[in-house]
Length: 104
Image 1 (cartoon, rainbow, N blue to C red):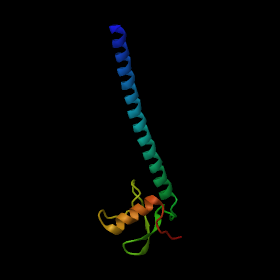
Image 2 (image 1 turned 30 degrees about the vertical axis):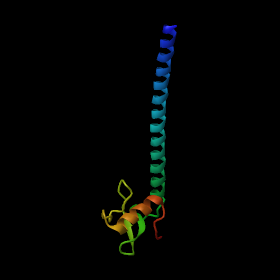
Image 3 (image 1 turned 90 degrees about the horizontal axis):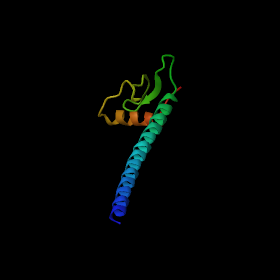
Image 4 (image 1 turned 45 degrees about the horizontal axis):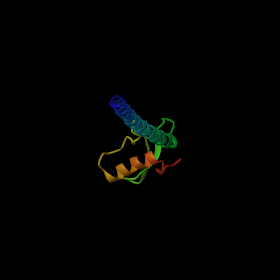
């Protein structure tokens, strides 16, 4: 009888460990999938911007309220981007969200 209880406890603990490992893996995978979806959306929004013959995005600068053709960096920020400036931060966010004002 004691051996049977030990076996049951052993099996339950191993099954519990396996369940916890599965849950951790699933949460990690779900997070990675969500990150990949977000990265895809940002890239799609940025690539959908009108561009000139030199492949610069045609945007309207929020800081100076002027038309501007600017290259986008690897984080899809215009080359004129200045970190910490509220207009530049808003502009970069708008590019990522696909709601930046453009011109043709």
